[in-house]
Amino acid sequence: MAEVLVIALVAVLCAGALYTASAARVIRQYERGVVLRLGRLRDDVRLPGLTLVVPGLDRLRKVNMQIVTMPVPAQDGITRDNVTVRVDAVIYFKVVDPTSAVIAVEDYRFAVSQMAQTSLRSIIGKSDLDDLLSNREKLNQGLEVMIDSPAVSWGVQIDRVEIKDVSLPETMKRSMARQAEADRERRARVINADAELQASKKLAQAAGEMSAQPAALQLRLLQTVVAVAAEKNSTLVLPFPVELLRFLERAQQPAVEAGHGEPDAPPAPAAPAPAVPADLLGPAAPPAPPTPSTAPAPARNTPSVPSDADAPTDPAVPSSSEQPFAHH
Image (cartoon, rainbow, N blue to C red; front, side, top):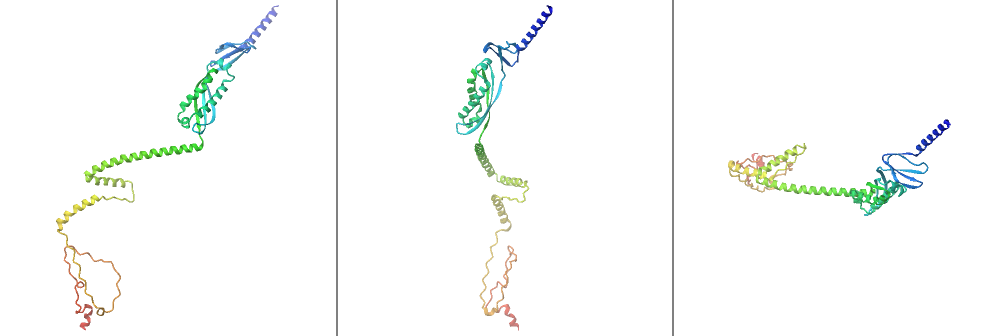
């Protein structure tokens, strides 16, 4: 009899251990448990830790309460200004009501993903290209509101939505590059014009200061020569101011008046020689080749002595060429 009791007790203990093993469930810290008994929802939500369910009668659904990061596939759309773009995004959400997440929707992850894609297409059609590229914060807020409205009834809270990338056609990229280049060139021209205006004002002030001191112009010229010579150029073009020539001319006039008195009068022109008959001159000699004149200029204040060639000749007196005939 005792052996039967022992065997029965061992059988009960084994059955209890088997029941406990099949009924025990472990819920992790970031999870909550929803129990359905014979298809009906139990009011209590199972907290983290060890919990028991009735095997064969209860069905435990564990719901993750962590923030889920879900990428939204890239969507093709046309903006309000008729530009074809391809936009993708990322959404952050979490479950705040595990009962609604299990009962209200079949698969809350799939539902949130589809709602994010349709909302992204809608926000693309309502926005301009400039808003998609520069005003993303406002679009993110609008997209978050559009997704969060139906997600509240699913027990899901949308934490954040971010537009990740905006892909443009190649033609649009080239057009935007030309626009940016033109804008940069416009800014450069405006800056250069402003610099020329300021420089002209400073140069006008410098010219006013130099006009009061003529020596400043010469000093400025020497500074320019030094600056140009520092570049080690093979050819140096030196501008010579006209004011310096006038200054040297005015300085030379008193020296001429003090040292030499009045300038010499120009010499009188020589009288033309009388014509000689061709019979007396004999045969004409061939003309000599022209030679450059190397005679020195007459010195100043030296009286000129007339030569024999310059003296007038008498037609009755034979010339020097005819003298040998007279001696014979």
